[in-house]
Structures are given as C-alpha cells and as structure tokens.
Amino acid sequence: MTTLIPLAWDASLEVGNAIIDADHKETVELLAEVNAADDAAFPALFAAFAQHLRDHLAREEALMDQYGFPPAPIHKHEHNRVRLELEGIEKRLAAGNLMLARGYAREAVPEWFINHKNTMDAATAAWIRSQGG
Image (cartoon, rainbow, N blue to C red; front, side, top):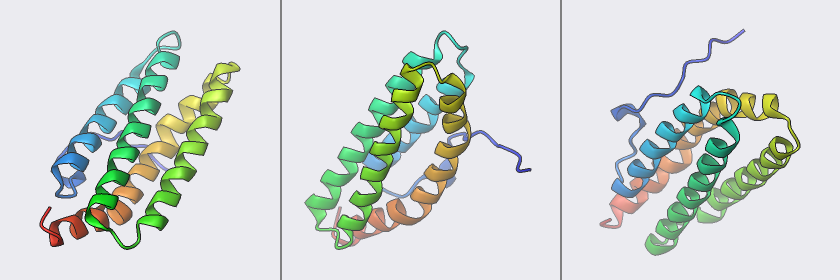
C-alpha cells in the first residue's frame, strides 16, 4: 500500500515558465482545499478546481501554439484525455458518488500532476525558453 503525500507547493514543482508555474501553484492550492473540504463543501470546491484545471490546460495550449511547440498534438491529446476524465468524475459526483470524486482528487490527480509536470510540462517550458519566451 502506498502512502499518500498531499501536494504542497514548493520550488520543486516549478517548470521555469511564469504562466505555467502560476497555474500549477493555483492547481496545488485548489486541490488542497478540495481534499480538506467536508462533504457539504466538496462538490462546489471540486467544480471550481475542475474549471481551473480546464482553464490552465487551455493556457498551456495557447503557449504551445504561440511558440510552435513541435509535440503539441501529443501534449494536447493528454489534456483532452484529462478533460474527458474530469467530465466523467463530475457526472458521477453530480449523481452522488462523493467517494469516487474524493479518491480521484486525493490519489489520481496528484499522481497525474507530478508525472505530467515532470514530462510534458517541463518539455513545453524548456521549448518556450529556447524560443525566447
């Protein structure tokens, strides 16, 4: 059994792009609020988190387009997968499946976030820097 360690913002989560890093910091902060919420507050906080994540992914995609990131289609495909996953979790939460949504926020999102940040987002930020951004 793995021990879950909540995400906490620190410099190790930065990728070196001010826009992405600001979004990542907000992602971590909102996720902490979601995971600390009682059952009554959880649905609204999860909805706010999900909307932030959608907006964040859109900002990353705009940066990829602006700087001509060559593997943008792969990165965008992953974003679309996450959007669909979020939509499914939101539907299940609306139908009353609080436990599933809590597990997603507590386990799946942090694991995905770290992996995505370390791979796709780090590569995107490095490309942007190489292009003068």
